[in-house]
Length: 107
Image (cartoon, rainbow, N blue to C red; front, side, top):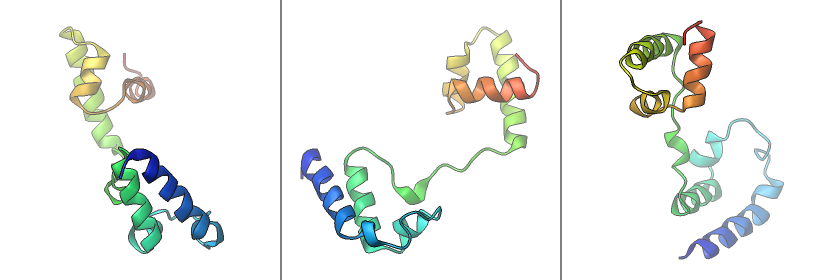
């Protein structure tokens, strides 16, 4: 199946099932990825298009983890690394790194 066919199938599935679904506007999107056959199929097609599996979402970092990352970022920055390099090292965006460091009064 090519990407065009996958997109068309996703739209067809949404029209046939999701339009009348009671979970359509629910914030519990995990319901669709785990309990709904149509949602599971749509997610599989999304992965085919380059997305990630819905049940494998990244969990947010805790304040403790951010404290550690920010302290290390200051040390690495002093050693000459750029914020882009530091962000890549921790698999985070540079925007999040800057925001978290600003929260802690670092930079």
